[in-house]
Image (cartoon, rainbow, N blue to C red; front, top):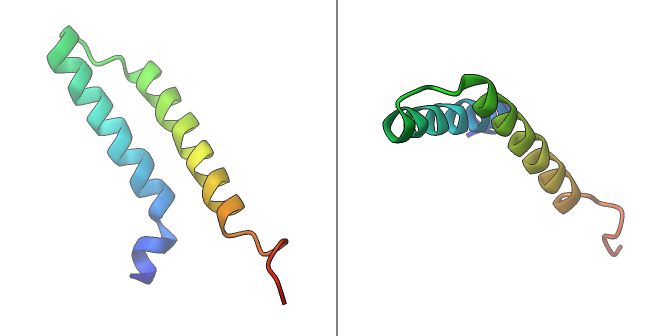
Length: 62
């Protein structure tokens, strides 16, 4: 489980990139790698920010 948490963002990025690329290939007939790369990168950054904000200890009661 520690291994998965350590590389969660890389796994999320690669999985999202592959799913989007394969989906575009079957829908449109081309890969659209650049568009899928930037969308996956943006989604991973948003996911990382949300998990950081959710786990923030700033407003935790003592």
